Structures are given as structure tokens and as C-alpha cells.
Image (cartoon, rainbow, N blue to C red; front, side, top):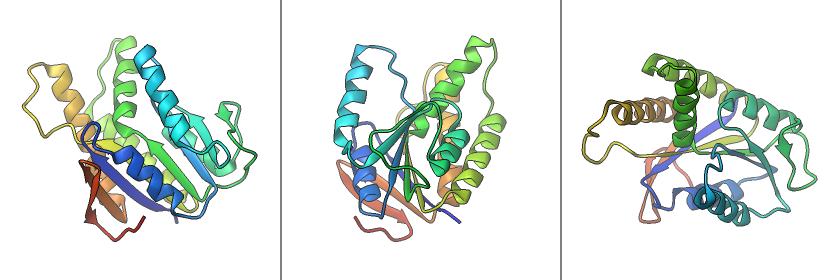
Length: 198
């Protein structure tokens, strides 16, 4: 059974950098599942910065915006047509780092809007439960990164409130299943659950 770790924090809190250090402190090989779409030049530059943070000699990257269960299965198999191999490592992954669940929820909402519908909390709960099952079936460790988006004022519009609620529901589900959870504030990790060392 795989080990699940949740890393959460606010925007620019240092959570992704911490999750990367945490992943690299464990035996590899290492697989990075990227959920971020390159929607504009700024986002494309941000993606490039994160790519440079990972050592191209040791990380395999899977770019997947929607099907995270499938991404975990491809990481476990070590092959797939949409896997960009940054190194020659194949086979099962010792550590899978998924960054991030917040963008995954955004992608689900956007895809639903293109179909003229709205994502529900029940739908996200089902998808997150399936993701937990897939993470438990993955060998080694699966680290999920998410954002704390509900610490500010209540959003004025229904769509943003729905987004906040969906991210919160997803985070609660992953945290409940995780053996460890960490909140990163100003670059400093605060352990919420379990014991970790980096």
C-alpha cells in the first residue's frame, strides 16, 4: 500500500519547493505529475521555472490536467504516450509528486463549463475518493500539493465560492487519507499530521 502525504499552503508560501525537497529526500525514482496548463506567457514561464527546479537527470514528468488516476497508473507503469521522460528511468516510481490539486479542480471546472455544466461537490468527492484509492495502490509515496484558498474573505460570486468549496472538499479528503500532512507558511513547514523529515 502506498504512503500518501499532503502538502498545503497559501500562494507563494513555498509549498512546492518543500514538496520537491521532501520527495527527493526519499528513495527514487521520482515522477512529477504536472496539472498546470500553459494558458499564457506568464504561466508558461512559471512552468519553466518549476521544470528547472527538478533535476532533469532524475525526474520523469507526466503532464496531466484532468485524469490524475490515469496519471498515477502511468507513473506506476513507467510508460505512456503522453509521458515526457526527462531521464532514462522506467518502471515503478518510488515517489510520485502531484502538483497541484488546486489547478486540477480548476481544470475540472473549466472542462465542465465547456460542456455547459457545473461541477458538483459530490462529483469532486467521487473523483477524489478514486484518486485516494489509486494513490494507495501506487508503490512508494504519493505527495499531493494543494492550496489553502478559504482563509480570506467569502468570494462575492457563486463560481468562486464553488471553486473554494471544491478545493476545500478535495483537501479534506486527501488529508483524512494521508499518513502525514504539512502546512507551509512563509517557507516554513508546520506538521499537521504524522511525522516527516526532509
